[in-house]
Image 1 (cartoon, rainbow, N blue to C red):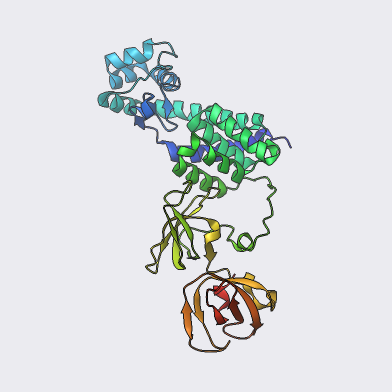
Image 2: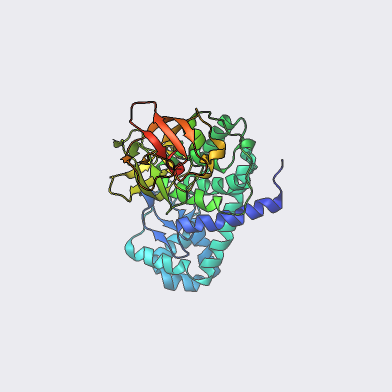
Length: 372
């Protein structure tokens, strides 16, 4: 399916807002950006990569007298009198005084106009490069544009290609896939926070996405894992590894406990996509795997009509009762246990009678929100 000119324009418009929110404002000057010299303006055009000087020269030409007054003789002469590639591959950092002057120049009407024109040209080119790579998903293209703005064309193309190899073709790559491979990338994966913010912004946009083929996992854990969680909601942590980052290779600790937690951050597509903090003093604090979470609000899947005697369910911790209508629990089991359903009372307050099959000691009637 070909991407039309109108669609490219639409994607570029969305990508522009996202990129601006991640980079800076009209007057932003990073004096020495990652030891690659100064980066300037709302898209942080960099000196080393040959972008800062041509922009500043275009602003100077719009009003030379104003530029001389703002920049001073020495800096004005360097900018106006140099070839456009004079700062290429040079770590031309800005002094504090130079940064203030350049910032003032960037914020003039001429500076804003030049930045708007260049940004539109650049971001449209990023999107077109994504189309050339084979992407058709509008959301993937917007994400691709931010990758190229931050990491250059080699990074964006590399990630699209590796994602396409896994998907069976770049045209099948959607937002989730390109985000996942950006996080795996040895370079762009270092910018985990920005990747997560861009993913969220693109996800919430009205751009369209491809329908990616999803592998079916027939395990009980994956079937019941929440598909997506909003920041701020409460969930049940049912035990497992706790990690210091969403992409950590090994857990900092393992918590064999059931805890009511709040979701405080999310990085969809990463190895450990949710950051949880215990709300009950159980000590869970960190990034966790999706299979370690049970969403509290998700009880529809456990409706008695869909469960039969003899089924095996996972008890995730909570009170155990002597009868399905008992007002008080006979005990509380703070364990995760694989149980067999031995009786059902669909009208009872505690509809399932469960018996542990793994020696964890669950024996009695339980609430439907405590099984999955």
